[in-house]
Length: 231
Image (cartoon, rainbow, N blue to C red; front, side, top):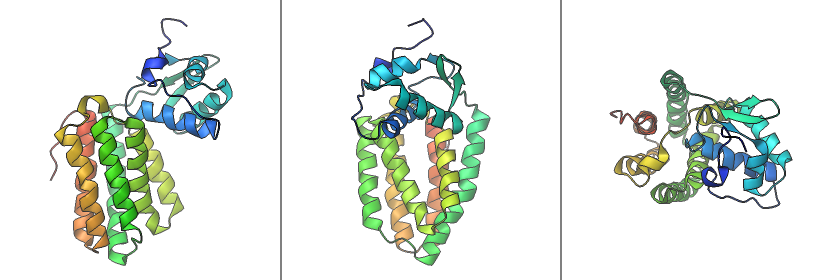
């Protein structure tokens, strides 16, 4: 391994994959490490090294990386591996701005129309998200956080909306999660999920929209390390 290639045993947390859905599992683990910032922009990561650390052949890793390239998270290095794409502060600001335009309106509509059918299930996911945040389990945290947001938005029945929001979420990676594990600001952000679910379930559209807007601005500040004021 060259000096430019990184020790993925440390950076992938020693994760090993099971036999089923290897491509999907590789995608899940690698994406989580990219989004959390554990795989750093600009460094070269060899496919063979990633595959070895995950305990799989190169094929599912290559397929996962191709998916990540289509999502805009990585850039391919021909016959060598991949590099995580650098995201500027402006990139992240634009992503959050778009998410606010889309998700705030969507949540308002769900609340107004009384479309939320599984509030209890979303509350279970919210609790799991909080536990993962407190424990610093970023693969679990990102999985549950994604499931909660996408599960709520799914009540509109708009597949295009889900695809757009999913892509924006993945592009807006969450810098520095390790530094805020268990912190008051991160836990406050995850607690907002409970208030959001309660407002939507109660049909309080204005309140639900306000909570979603605050949540997106709040998390943008935490993840960028700027502690942006919410309100």
